[in-house]
Length: 98
Image (cartoon, rainbow, N blue to C red; front, side, top):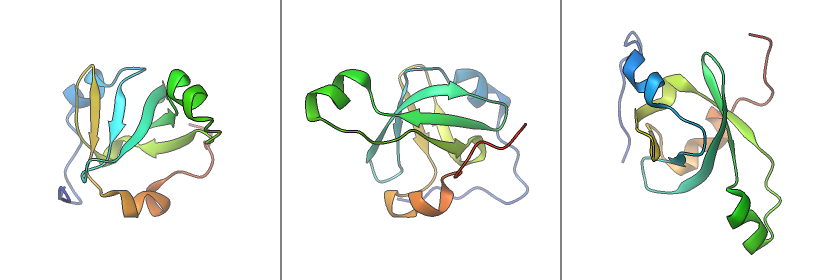
């Protein structure tokens, strides 16, 4: 599933207000990417859940996603507007100075 957002649409400020640290981040096709670790103005950092990473031995590095790709968010979950196969093209490689 892919949620379309018009190029001119502004992200609802209420969605950004609902973005909280430790919420699960999930793609539109239901793949869990990790949890929200940090929030900046127009991006947020995703990292593995500490207890899951330890249990599975994951050493996945944290990465940043643009808030404009959020479809919806609440205290428990952030649903992204893209499917998992597009993650590589949407990730922000490095945090640029805001």
